[in-house]
Length: 109
Length: 112
Image (tube, rainbow over all chains, first blue to last red; front, side, top):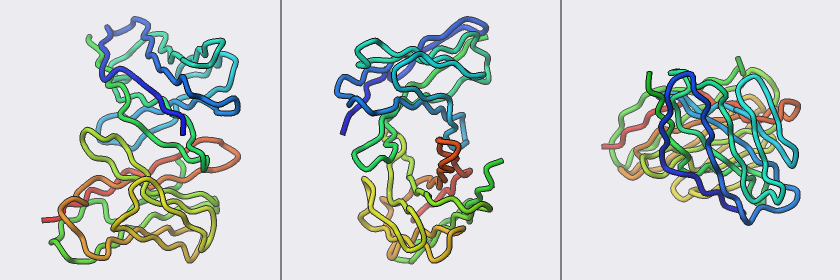
């Protein structure tokens, strides 16, 4: 199964953009890249997913490298409420989403 | 609101006792999942279901069993709880039309 690598933690200032990187060098051609986040004391929630093209939604943007071996989740203006653990996920061979340890994002006022 | 509830939300039990956690959905989605979350490990998949009486093992299924006798309920059972099963357990559903997982609020289990 393809694996993802993310930094353990990152810091950002409030109202500044945040770029959360993810490496997935063993990704297969049909794997979607999924991002979820987990706020303190809550279950994970969906953020965004994509295959090849960059994707945007109300929460974030997903920039996918041309070779698909890496991607970046972009929060355009971080707020205190965006402090969470962000998971970059690829499906396993059975199609299930296997979560790694993610990146803990801290946002400073 | 994805219509997913877990019960109990908190439970303290003793080693060797059986424990059942319940995940209930108000819709009729096929796919349901049980994950556990521990410090330093992130979320790990225990078991999943793709329909009534159709279940399969995830990454960390040893010591756990599941049952799905009706669409809306997915039960996770620890036949004989051990301290290593102290964890926060999350249930999730996967509405195929939405293409994303929706998680419950979690069940915190402490095994003494």
